Image (cartoon, rainbow over all chains, first blue to last red; front, top):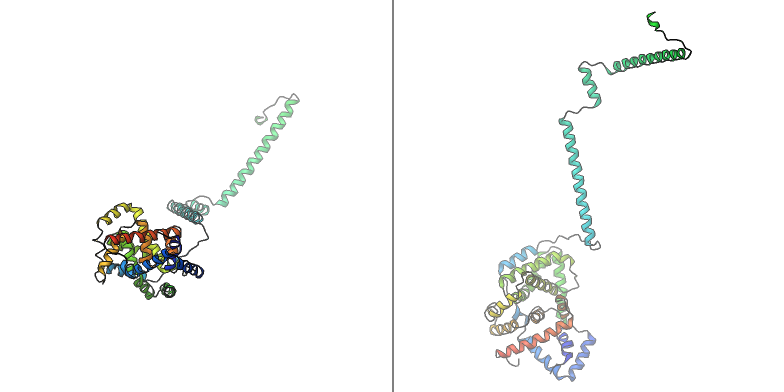
Length: 185
Length: 192
């Protein structure tokens, strides 16, 4: 014979897990239920004689105790917890950070490489090149500029003069005059 | 019924836990001394292997240390430790897929392993008989029984630890008691 109330309430009653109302209700039931009375008596005796906690206790080896106490007695360092940020957001941020560090690092080292190549190739600025050329005996830039201007002016004069001659000959051709080479006359 | 003792115990545990968190080594060592035998007894009976039980014992406390900052002080420390120990044992069996093997080995060694541990016990013979009877239980019934009787863990916490409704835990406990009585009768222990 079994009573469902024993399973539902009796074990919890013995474990001290019923609230005050439930406890009183079970006590009332107990008065009229022989099955629950027998179960309660038997289980109480078993707990007292057979199921004492020390029946199920054992000693670990001393070195296990020592190791656990050594490790666990150290001061605890609190770990930063951000429970409101979901794991995937954290992972995404972490991945982006890694990418940024990767690209940033790559760009930095690439810049260093170019700079070192320029240095080893002896690259000089425009001004340095001009001075180097002048040292090798080249005309100074101001003289070059002045002579260039003279050349440009004379070229422009000759172009104007040639144009005037061509225009003049063209007009004579139209009036039926045979062009004569006057330069030899 | 030890309601008052339980409340006192919890208050004392809270203070020790706070000491532990503040870095006072007495906090942890006192808690450890209080529960080490119960936890080790539980792990030994779950695994039937002293070396493995010792490994899991260390893992249990190291995990507790790692997660201590997340522990809700209003919970029972005892239940917390037993919850971690139970998880470690179950994880081990799941990972190694040796549950059946271990159980078969345990069945073969009934009477040899459980009778060995505590030579200093006055009631060595009764202890041997009871542990032999516990060994014959279905694993789920044995877990509930050991958590409750060996660990003193509350049924509502057992339900959480074993991830089952409280009525399932109570049903397993009732069957465990019934089967232990049968086994004890077979061994000549009648009408306690």
